[in-house]
Image (cartoon, rainbow, N blue to C red; front, side, top):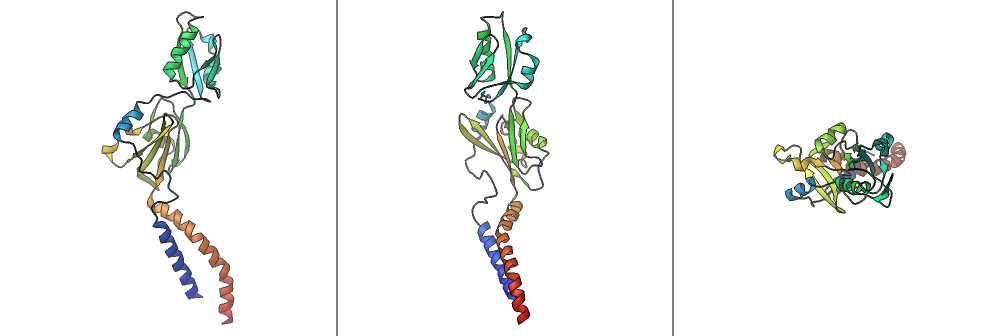
Length: 244
């Protein structure tokens, strides 16, 4: 029985190392060499948020507060699936596809037909980023400002876990229907450029696990079938051992 058990464990170890020797671990996300350059960082930093369907907008018309009640600004006005909002006097206006300053300018021109020197402030109230991986509280983080730094987002998520790979933090940004990916090394002071750290609404931040955790997860995947087999054949081996 002992020799059979030893051979089973040897088979498990061989299978484990052969599986872990592959180029990438399926446990780790965003495995790619397609990382943007320093020039791409600057372009991302300069990005303006573009209003999208299903966003919620806070709209304030200065000097005319009755046209924008408090509850409207607290909850936000929903941009419908066609990209339109409905407002007093001017009715439906398309706002999706434009920046916040551009929408303010469009609305001011429309309200100028009815009001004296209208001045508006537009703000998207549902902006958020998403953080996944080795943080203590993964999920959506509300953006209170136009942008946020990666450090602020990680702090809002409770900080990094002990298994976080601190030199492999990825940020995925959507720019004109294209996805751009940045890689940040928090262990290198020289690499912590301001433009490298900025995140925008709907960005996805992924903190990779270190190699030891990836190995442990992979080893569990490989050893589980062998443990099941060992449990199944164990009683038969015990019976054979007792007979002998």
